[in-house]
Image 1 (tube, rainbow, N blue to C red):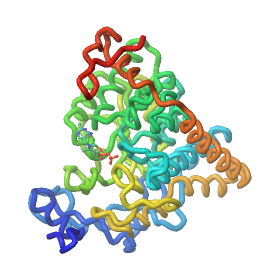
Image 2: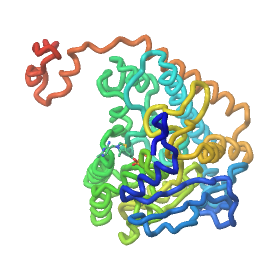
Image 3: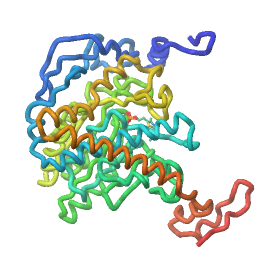
Length: 438
Ligand SMILES: Cc1ncc(C[n+]2csc(CCOP(=O)(O)OP(=O)(O)O)c2C)c(N)n1
């Protein structure tokens, strides 16, 4: 129950969730050591996160004391076949991956600082991708420029990994007319069809049919393009997921269903709402390839995606890829976040220790270590990229600040298929008709 200050402790919160029909699942004690097991990607998994389940109505596939296996935080190897596959890419391409991972992290971090400080008066929903960058970038590295992606509410990183324009993205967050949606969309509607980016999307589970439609088009036209549907672990519970993946399997439509399993469905632990241990177990019966990978390892994601892309282009249809990862910040916005500090702490639905453990598995730092260890890039190359991406991010904020606000009447021009004439019924708050500019 809430204390005198109206606060509630985490244990009580989980008990309430459990009493409401979900299981009290505790993802904690991340520091505990457990027995080694073979990595899904060829590395060694010698760290586990104990996951305790209790209470009726929960997911029976999780038993008390079960452990989700993760790599150790200190020096995380990227080894085996996946590493060799990534190492086979030309140096310039590897550096582009590094550049885009950095751009994604830095752009969102700067936005975080602006939102938290209140500077620039930013408002609206903003779902950070920080911590999950290896998935977008591993996937995108295996795609061609003209392949399609359908993103999610947490999609800034998808856009940046596919070459989205930082300036236009920043201007959209500032609601300026130079933004991707002319300042009328905000974070969750950023779209760039010229780059095959079918948009971020506020509708959880909307990516499935968007990707299926694009892939069906390419199939009919014989262009060999594939489409990626990104989705979260919570979104996997959407009935549209089963419907879309089944149809794609049935008709051999080349969609890559890429699940970003960050274990959290807003503030609800994923194991309370997911009926199997892993999302990639849902659809095993469809007889399509399933790849379960360490989603903080860009090599593992890239290698799985490359296989899935080849499979799709060869006419065999869809694949399912699940990347295990974690978001460093709150579901949306920046509760628990501080200016100049990475990560959000003190949130009621997860422990700070858990967050720190995951932050120590930083996908970018890990990729950097791998590039240096393999002598695929020099420290100098990487330092230059870090500086230039920071400069590009800072320039995007300056661009957004200098841009004009949109004309208040211009928004209605783009909302009706019938054009401005059809939009004349729009009224302002006082009930007066909004004059239409043409
Ligand atoms: C159809 C629909 N239902 C519910 C919501 C509210 N909502 C927004 S994000 C979200 C959680 C999504 O969780 P998950 O799919 O795991 O993605 P994550 O946020 O973890 O990346 C929900 C329920 C929504 N936007 N759309």
